[in-house]
Length: 395
Image (cartoon, rainbow, N blue to C red):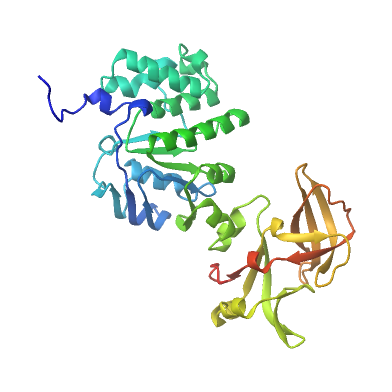
């Protein structure tokens, strides 16, 4: 007899990528507060992550990104606020009831089990058939380049090898949410690049909601659909890699993203030849601003003081005088192969007598030496202005 609408067996519903029953996982954090004693680890945190989205938590060590991840997992509990997974409030649910896979920075492997059995453990727990377990474990092992280690115990593995085993154990499952806490921190550079590409492809194929914690900007930019930049437990900005890099909303984001980072120099609006212009403080650099741009700078920001920002690649440098370009001397040259990074001296701090430097990125064929004079042009569309007191973008 044929049965209509019969559900697949449990082991068919909960196995991996090649035969997936898709699970929805929309995540929402509302007004989350988490303290450890007097230390505020997460403060007034609001974030919404869409189903199938790959979000990266990015920030320096101690900024609260791992604590936020542990709150979502149920390994920590918020002092205030609510956490929702697919519309269901999960504050009081145990980690086991949240249907997540967590990959820790520290491996958490079973020392008495082989690599094969460590990876297979989640599938054995839900009674997946032996043949299916064998197929999935070997497939994941091949992706992570650990096929020749399946019979070994964790005690004889390197740190990077153990991290790959921990990652493989999460990859063989099909949970609602993947939570990855710096899973590639201990991998060699080449394997990190290969694994990063595979994680991105696998997440796209599986369609699982994924949150990835890292302090590495390259990982964040290459993996994320959106990046959540966190500092001192506060969400500074959430946006696509393009938005976070090119349209920073705070001084922290502007100074944290990029290598080298954005040039950030004190500035003020002033008059020159009867025209309102932007002057870089303690320099002879005056930059014209369109009336539309000036209109966005409110009186409060002018009173608090302005910080001018521009990325090194958004400055044009030439070694012959040109009209409307600004002359400055080369302080240092860093040839990096694919690019040159030039430190350009614009002036001197009157109090510290330290040079005021601007970093410029040029093509490696641009030949200059320390002490040479070059001429600079700034693209107004790539300039950023911040309120020095609030540290938020104003224009």
